[in-house]
Length: 395
Image (cartoon, rainbow, N blue to C red; front, top):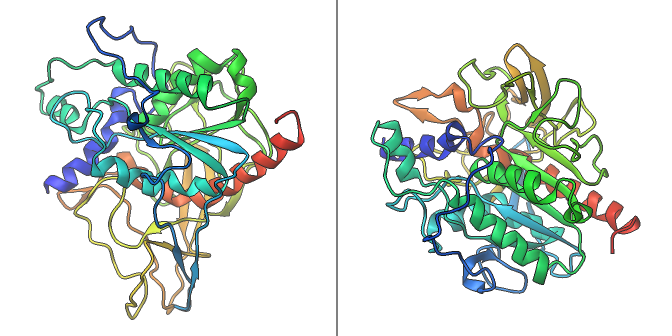
């Protein structure tokens, strides 16, 4: 049960504002020590290192008839663009803000959400003193922790970004990637440091997963951002892909933290499987065993029938999943449809729901696997954007 509660708490960042647009915050207290992001130890991932991003990403493609093929992953150390990633709420450190130690929670989430982009870009992922699971648990129990700094997470990421721009970017195009708390922090970073600023020329795109990015109805800009629009094609540059995923047959309820508009705006939804609109196949990479962005107690069903030994850390499920952005009375969200094959030799469903006390928590949808569901599509989009950027004014 404790593991299941932690799974839900990892999502609760959205409830505290981290999953959506983060409002401007005061600077960190003067007594708070700033990180030195010139120090390589303050980064989870940097190019040319054996670190959290240098991991086995091979996948076994499982077809509906039970046959399998192995898809070997190959990183591109000479990739012409960069990716900058901010991870979601995963820290179990005892304080309200995480320490700068690299722990299994941070390396696990990089494996699931970010390292695969190494096929198309050089990878940068700073460690930051995020709001912790521990603090969220205390607040949900009505015992808010003292001593935390709500601005610290953003200030750390801003400092890491400025260090990267000054010493690592060298005029290269960059894709920003985040999930949940990470998406909220990046939303603030874009609004304050990129939107309408010189750095916007370097922005290839921003991928904001598991968030509620606000835009005016029928428009691409004017909510969270003044001049950074939503994406409409896979080759469009300087734009945003934002979404929160739910099962098509279990849309977000009115109490959901995702998909809901506010103050006259609506939640943005850009479908990684069909950026221009409509439905498309989701190129998911699911963990072979039940190791998602947080450790959950949910049992992983066998991927094949009868069960086969799968040696790779990920599986692909061709033809099983499609996604479509839906706008209705429930809000704007990425509706994920499962297409079972009756009598097939492959599993006909996926794990990923948040389950507490034996009950699926519909408020959260498929938040745990927002990245897993779409990462194959997103990596392809980043590749197309890179080509378009280099063919244009990029260098």
